[in-house]
Amino acid sequence: MMTPRTGHDGAPKVAVRLLFGDATAIGPGKANLLDAISRTGSISAAARAMGMSYRRAWLLVDSLNRSFQARLVDTAAGGSRGGGARVTELGMEILGRYRLIERKASACVAQEIADLQKFMAPPAGGDRDAR
Image (cartoon, rainbow, N blue to C red; front, side):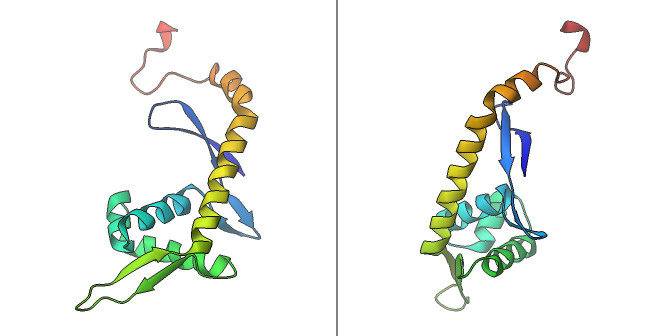
């Protein structure tokens, strides 16, 4: 499934969700969470960086780990040495392949998105009569 979205720069962006059965194996949120865990080494720090609850992040990690043949994220319990999380080699492989799919999907539909964008209303607060 591809969903047009708007990126941080206001330009349209394609969001890809890969569904296997009824569950989303990976999509933009889970991919961004993997990126954040890879950067921070922690599910809780990744959740904070993304503005999501720890519980939501943990449920997404659990879903990722259950969706694939092996874990994408390994965790270590807290304690005197602290806990942490790391994206496994498979997790990095899945993330890289997902990002490639995103780039290819965006490139494939770039012209159609540009054509569709001509019909979009101006952003909130914009003046419709100014068009």
